[in-house]
Length: 347
Image 1 (cartoon, rainbow, N blue to C red):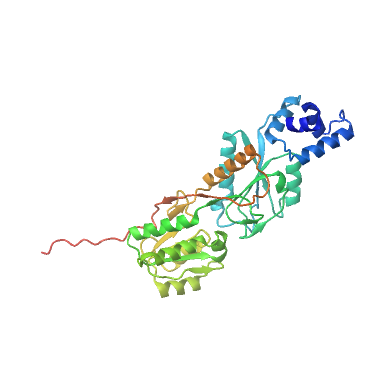
Image 2: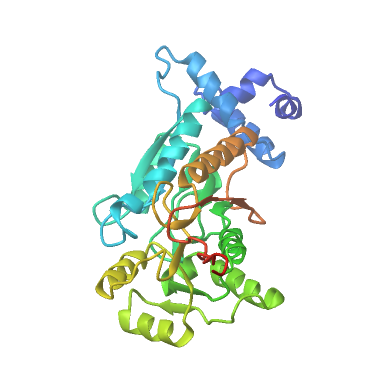
């Protein structure tokens, strides 16, 4: 602002008032100062502006600066079972991290029972909310429009694809490799992968890529083709299992209810008759697999947005950055090692 004032030959206070359209500054002077500021590519620091506004106000706000968490709400788009739906966990993590840094997070729902994107955009503008976290969307290639040029934004998971905003995602490739490593440690060579087509696409095919690479690495694993289906298909699954005889079935929450029901119908016991591993296991469940820790993922997203606000990094980046978060192994009871029968000494 001092540079603009020097170039315009006025006091810095005059520049401040002109850029705020203060009527005490003549209209011609305001226009001249704005032209100079634009030519010099002057941009106000939003945090300083907010601080000054609070100091000038006779009734400063009692609540912290708000961030928006925008997500499709429940309904037909809800993935998996209610207790396994992850946006609530992402939101909880974002709120916890934001509160620690002096911010708060507000939820905005987008669907038929919520509000359209244009209304959310209007609210964000009116309330001068500087940051937005885009939660996981129902489809693999989600998109909607906000005034990105004025927002510090980050996306959770791979589902929001246009525009190409920075994103925070679970490292699905590493998660699958971890599952395969556990199978290797326990001597399971015949490991089969079955996912929904949409679920596989939602992670940009990384689960399948890691599975394929592990099979090709050193010949330890049998080359069993993965089974990708629109949804649970007992006929397709039964045919695939009879043909390839996997000792371990790696799957996801989308197919797990169908798989466990199929086991009951066929009097099979997961963890004994065959093993199961989940690419998105529950933290306290019986099914072994990788817990993606959605709370930590949401917290990371909030920290990224707040860091962007601090550096005044707004809009769509020239090159998108992707931050990968690692999950942790859940032992469960569905991937027990093979039992070794020990024979006693001959009589």
